[in-house]
Length: 210
Image (cartoon, rainbow, N blue to C red):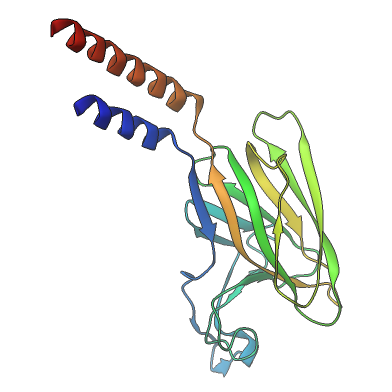
C-alpha cells in the first residue's frame, strides 16, 4: 500500500499541469477618470499592461506607457452583456506575449478567437522554444463567431507564445480560453524514476522476506 501511494504521488508530481486562462477572475470595476466617467465600453473592465492567471502572465508590448490589455467582464454593457469574461488588446498592432510565471516550458493546446467588429481576419501565433532551437508559427482565420482553434503539435516545450493585435480599423479581435499545459522539468522525471526504482527494490525485498 505504501509503495503504491508513493508511486501515485510521484506520478502525480510528474504529470503535466493543464490550465485554462479564461479571464473570469479579472478584478474589474466601474472606472472613472477624475470626476468624468469612462464611456460605457470601459465600465466593468480590467485594463493594464499585464494580466496573470493560472500561473501564466500576458504582457503588452506597450509596457508602462499604455494599459493595452483589456478584459471586459460579464457586466460590461457593450462587450459581454450576458456571458463570461474575455480579453483583447485595446491598442492597434499591440503584441501580446504569454509566459509561465516560473519561466518553465509549456505547451499551447487551443485558443478561442472572435472578430470584434465587421468582417473576419487572420492572426499568426509564434511559439519560442524553451531550448532556443526554433520559433514555430501557425495562422488562424477568425470570423465574427467564437471559434476554438487548436495549435499543432509543434507548440510544445515553449518559453513564450506571442501574437499581434490587428490594425485600428477592421482588424481587432477578441481572445478567450487559452488552454496551456506546463511541461515537467527534467529533474521531475529523474525524481520519478528514482522513486519508482526505490519502490521496486522495496517490493522485491518484501517478496523475498516472505
